[in-house]
Image 1 (cartoon, one colour):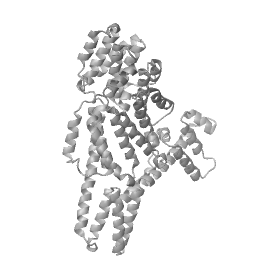
Image 2 (cartoon, rainbow, N blue to C red):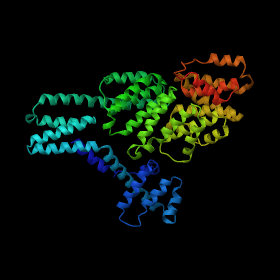
Image 3 (cartoon, rainbow, N blue to C red):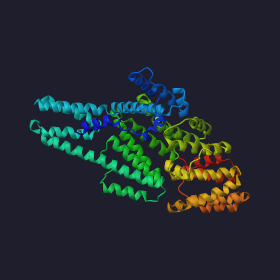
Image 4 (spheres, rainbow, N blue to C red):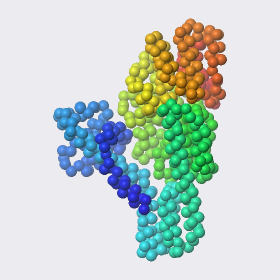
Length: 520
């Protein structure tokens, strides 16, 4: 049976550890909540057979985040014993893997375990020809499995009932249930495939800079796999569908058209909250909706869903808190910044710069956002201080955060050096931007970014003309303006810098004026 095989594989999983995985030990420990740290230490102490075992001490030192390997080694052994330290790290990693895997299996699969036990018990009764109690147990298993949309296990239940149908009152009813469940299971699997293909396509757009027609690909995928959006979906399937639509919005920069679908889908999902066993998906959905409202400049709605997200993060002893805390704080700070609460936005993000986190992409977004806050507030030296931490190549950042992140970083750097009057750096960065990104921007039909850079050049070379009617008319006639409600909020922020120069006003005040003039 598939679940026995899966359980065996699960128990063997912890044996496959390589030195490459060992390098992730610090990142994994950084995801532990305070409560999980205490639970893991108790787990270690309970299983330690010798009194001189140093695994607890090593875990506490690594959880500190601020001590390098050599210092840790000296604290543990009094000298640098590389081999002993490596062996201790390997044993600690093994313990963490066993601890997290067992916890995850117990917490995430508790319902599946109940159903599996029911099925095994029923099959034993059937083998002993105790048909009446066997069918009663299978009915209990079916009820739980249907509540939690466990289609694979329902398949096992119906197959068992069909196998012993000669003793069951209604074979036709079982076959009907089996076929209905098979359709739902197939739908979930199709959505899973589509989600994987959409992610692959988005990866090509975002991280490799390829130009593809995302909407056509999405339409073709739904057509190929015969997906009817009006079909009844499970909780997980609805999450996958919401994710797909959200990815489409990201690729096409059209968040407004997806807003209604996302909120209506959530109302369907929340009906299952009482039976939900996967809060991870619930948090993800709330984040997607909150982000969609933010991108549509509906900040109050965004904060409302962020509050719901935070409440879910606190559930189950804050099990998923560390996984989502960076995304939560980033989106919260952005909402604060664009609702005239910039000081509060800065205070939300500042402490994050001094800690280590496993979520590199969110961490990079936080650095860039905080730099934007400082820049908008004319704190250019503080912005430069953050920028100085970007010491990797653009290719590295493209791989970690995507091409759009790199474009924003490089454009921000150009504007920052203009404000700081770093003449030589401005010239070199403008040439570099043109050489490295103009082709991609043309191919991806983002010529407005090129237009913006060309206007920045005109301002940079003749700043005294920026307030002239000629320059203002040039700006007005240069852009193909988008409906303001659909315009990207970060594009508006870049334009606000240029407008602030034309009107001789502060960047932040100009930004808020533009945002407030269009948000509904």
